[in-house]
Structures are given as structure tokens and as C-alpha cells.
Image 1 (tube, rainbow, N blue to C red):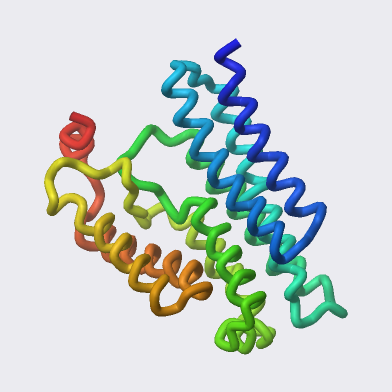
Image 2: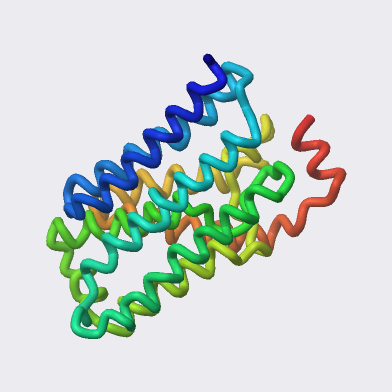
Length: 237
């Protein structure tokens, strides 16, 4: 029965994401999506601990992620549309979140394990929109004024979504950390920035941290370059 435990946890991820859509609440929906993050991390850990990793579990995980980190944040973001009378414009922009998220996950499923992500991970993209919701609900004038502007509102999901399919951008990850301090500079730096942003910006910090992660990953890509087979072998060793 242990082989079904990771899939059961993945199902909880899916249920949390679906419920977030159904209730469409600006407080509980973000909470449910954060729970999806927990389940999404936990299913992989449990699968490895129980030696119950499978191709089925991998595909189920991606399907759940499309709902929880693609459809759910897209729907919640659509509720803030400054142009509710012309839903076609809203749908056209919001669709990028779902479509590019699905493409990102499909690419992930057919790519061999790497010490970094190719493009922005869909959970990080979802976290950006959770941050937007938290900031607006806590009356951040910066976010309210920014997203009340139609151009800003519609162009944001387009840019953020394209970051998910910018596969030539290597987004650094904790799985790429080694015992050498210099190899982990970017990981330590984002932790420092996250703590600093939380103290300075509070609720606004969530989205800013994701943007900082993107900026640092671009620098990481430019400075590190593409990993050669020798680099990958050394990292795995």
C-alpha cells in the first residue's frame, strides 16, 4: 500500500487547489494554495523515503500542479481585472498563466534531472500571484495603484508566464547546492534578500522575492553559463 501514499498526498494538493478555485475567497484561497505548496513538496519527499517513486506519480503531480499553481492563481488574479466588462481581454491575458504553466510542466517531465530549473518553476510563478493578492487585500497602495492600470494588469501575466518557458534561463535551486560555499552564493543571497524584504515590505515582500529570484537567476545564468557534462557529473558526485 505504501506506493499509493505519495499519490494520496498529491491528491490533497489537487483538492486544495480545486477548493481554492471553488470558494474564490481572497483570504482562504491563498491559504489553500500555500497548503498545496506543502503537499507538493511532501509527496516527493515521501515517495523517496518509501522508495515509491513512479512515472504515474510524476504525471499525477504535474496534473495537480496545473490546477493548483496554474488555473487557481489565474482565476483569483482574474477577479481583480480592471476591465470586467470586456472579459475577452482578461481571458486572453490570464490564459498565458495556464498555457505556459502546462508547457513548463511538460518540459520538466521530459527533461533529465538537472541542478537547476529551466525557466521559472510554476510554483514560484503561483507564489507571485499569491503575493499580489496578499498585498492588495492588506491595502498596499503600491500594488493597488499598479494593478488598477489596465496595461500593467494585462502585461504582468504575459511577462511572468513567458519566464516559465524561457528554458535558456537557468533558475538556481537548492538541489544544485554543494559543500563549497562559493557554489551556493545565489541560494544564500536569495535567503538574505527574502528576510530583508519581509522586514521592509511585509505582505508586499512575497511578490518582490519572486522577482528577486528571477533577477538573480538571470545573473546566475550569465555568470555560470551552461553546465557541461563534466559540471553535471561533478555536481551529482
